Amino acid sequence: MLIEVFLVFLKIGVSTFGGGYTMIPIVERELINKKGWINMDEVMEYYTIAQITPGIIMVNLSTFVGYKKKGILGGIIATLGVVLPGAIIIIAAALFISNLADRPIFFHIFAGIRIAVCALIADTVIKLAKTVFKDIKSIIIYIVVFGISVSPSGLLPVFLKSPVLLVLASGLAGLLFFRQKPEAKP
Image (cartoon, rainbow, N blue to C red; front, side, top):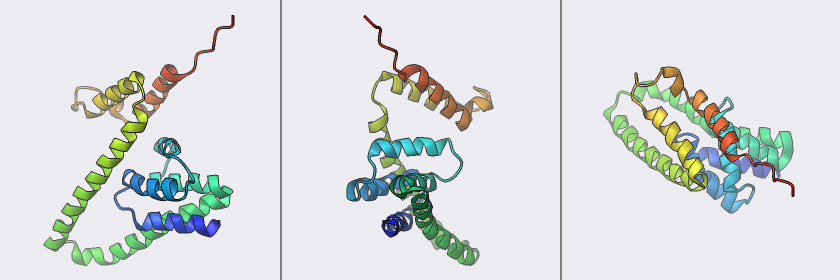
């Protein structure tokens, strides 16, 4: 099972470019549809936790899923699997990038890659929206946070636009809006 965990996350690490949110379609295909190890609600929970913990989203997600499957060793193995391909690619790129970066062909290649990454992120946003917007309270929190985050500089104090503050404030709003009220006893 540990080898399977490693190989699944190695495959995810090899086939994913563009960061944590662009990985959701691959995570969905590999971990939900093919393996059945987690469901989309768990993915969203792991992404939420990853937003408030240090580190790269996919590393955190792989650690959570590996831990769920095989404990601490599973978490370590899954993390190694997802990190290894990127580390090898970064080392290889660092060795060759200084000689190639100024060539016009690479500007064009990177322009195309940015467009693909944008499309993958848009796909992820749509999937997230389907799982998050369950009622009017969710939509209100979204509108307030989005409005603050895109407001022009100078309109609000800079500290209010801090992602940390916005995530913490949203957590507090979730606590206030979504907590279950005790049922009245007859």
